Every structure is written in structure tokens, then in C-alpha cells.
Length: 421
Image 1 (cartoon, rainbow, N blue to C red):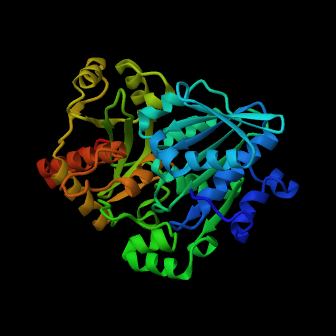
Image 2: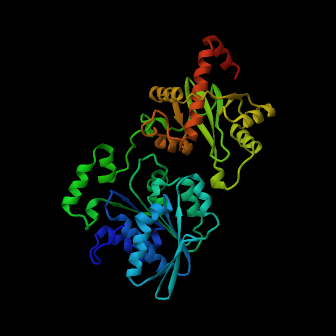
Image 3: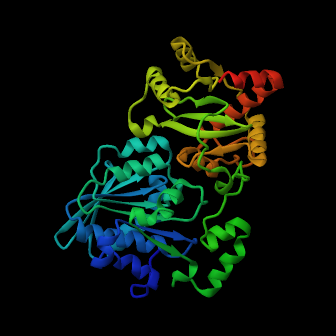
């Protein structure tokens, strides 16, 4: 955020300032999103408008400013915001010990709490606080668990949510849950381009346009949500792979499990019909978001619920989950199989299945659908980035199991097996 000419704002920026003051839009919307190109002037107006809204509409309350880290939040937004407020006559007092800043003006006072949403563990940092509003700077860089935990803390009447971000890709959880559902979410969506920043000269805009090409140009200059570089399953398409499953019966059922205690536990029920596999349901538990770790017995109860009364051929489990493998075997209902965890071989197999039309997902399997858009290669390495990969791991276990099972069975044995189901 940078200092600006006091009297010069673009029409789009003025809309950010006015939406909460106009009764028609104030009552219609509960959140505002400013996304788009870099250097488009969205962050400065959103931050200042948020601060003014808090002072006018939520005096005496706590609100939150959230960034990827507290350090980046201070650098990109908070330090400039508080300098501007102080220059405008506000009294600004920071308490570094608590990570909060108290702003007072004309008898009104608001406490701004600063939080960083670096990873899944960050959700625990914001638990317990009661907020009247929250601003997320670069929300697309934050994990969903942190954002949803912060939103859950906004229990004060009249609370509002503010978001800013540069675009990521259409499979990103924030695009799917907020932008694609903006009417349902009562979200005022304001898309910025460099032309919306009156502080940029034509020469500066032209220089930025020359800096980027390809997807970076589409994202950073045009402000479009488009697929990222390095996406592992770039052949995945919701139009092709996400469909309503056919009704039962299926030739066989298998459950795949990526085990997690601190990390999310991802389980999926798969059904095969005529050589195609359908992800019918999924069970997902994130202990960091829930605040409580499950025991293996509690995970097993979720496995039973996912299976229902179906005859499950096998439960294919993360091979490192020795305790859960033992737990499933002790109960005696399911055949527990340690998954083949050869990562690159598995990724190649999943890619073949996607290309050949053998793999489909029910629309309600939202975690897997989201991760298809997020799962990507680590920069400069032939290995996946170890984040947003839990559903992708359980999917890979299923594919490797099914390929191995097909190699073991003769056509005659396959026919006999299906006739018994």
C-alpha cells in the first residue's frame, strides 16, 4: 500500500469506500472482494476503507488484519495504513506484545489484531478471539482452514468480511467457494485492472505489460484467474471428470485412505463400473481446523460410516500408517492393504486414467476437486510440492491398487469375481 493524492481516487476505488455507507449495498452485501492485476490500487483503498468502516460501524470492538505472515502484512499493508490514519488525526498505539494496534478518533476506538495465515497450523492462532470484522490481504495465499476459522470468529452483529488478492486459478478453493458463489455468499465482487489506479502513468503501465508473458501476463496484468504453471494434472477438467455418478450396483467398491493425525485425514469411497472408477463419496477430517485430534478408533468409525453396508473389496491405506492398518485389521470387517506409494509412477498412472476417461468424481467430492487445481510440482524439482496433496495421495493409492489388481487377474477370474457380487 502506498501514499496517494488525497483527492484523486478512481471510480472503482470510490466504490470500495462507498459500499458500506450506502444503505442499499450495505444491507445487500456481507463481504467485499477486491481482486485483479498487480499495482491496480486495490489494497490501499480496501485497507483504508476497512479501517474507516471499523471506526464508524464497530467502535469499541476488535477487528483483524490477516496476511500470509505478520511480517508481510506489516510490509504490504499495516504499516502504511496506520501511518495514514495517524496523519489523518487518529491516535495510533501499538502493543507488540499482543500483536494489536489500538486506533482512536473522535471518541471512537477500535483494536486491530494482526494475524499471519502461513499454513494449516495457523488456524489455531486465531481461535478464541471474538471479532467484528476481518480483512484478508492476499487471501488466495492462505490455507482454507485459517480463513474459515477467522470468519467463524466474526460473531458480532453487523460483522463484515473484506478480501484482497491477485488471481490464482479457477480450481482454487477461494475462487470456487466465494467468487463462483458470490450471490449466495452476498459478496460484492470488484475486479481491478491497472487502469483503476490513477497513480500509475501510462508509461508505468506499459512497462508492467512488457514484464510478463503467458499465464503471468494473464494473472498479473489482466487480473484473470487461470491455471498455474507447474500444475501436475493439467489434463484434469471439471467438465469432463466431474459428473453425477450412475446409480448402483457397481462391479466393486474400494476405499482409499491418506492417513493424518496433524495433517488432514482423507478417505474416499470408489466404485468401479465397466472399467471406469468413480469417486462416490469422501470423508475428510482436519484436526487443526477442528482443534481436536482423532484417535485411530475414531478414524475407523468414520471409515465404517463411509462404507455403509457395501461390500468393500479392500481398504487401501497409506503404508506409513502402521497403527491404522493394524486397527482396521483388528476389527476384521475390511481387508486392509498397504498402498503402493511410488509417487512418480503413481502420478503417471493417474495421468493415463484421466486422459483415457477412466476416472470420474462426484460433484460433492469438493476436496479432491480443489486439490486437482492446487497440486503442482516443486520449483526446480521432479517431485510434487508437499501441500494440498491429501486427496491426491488417496486417489493415487486407488489407481495403483486397481492397476496391480488388474494385472493379477485373468479375464476368467474377473468374470467369476463380478458374478459373485
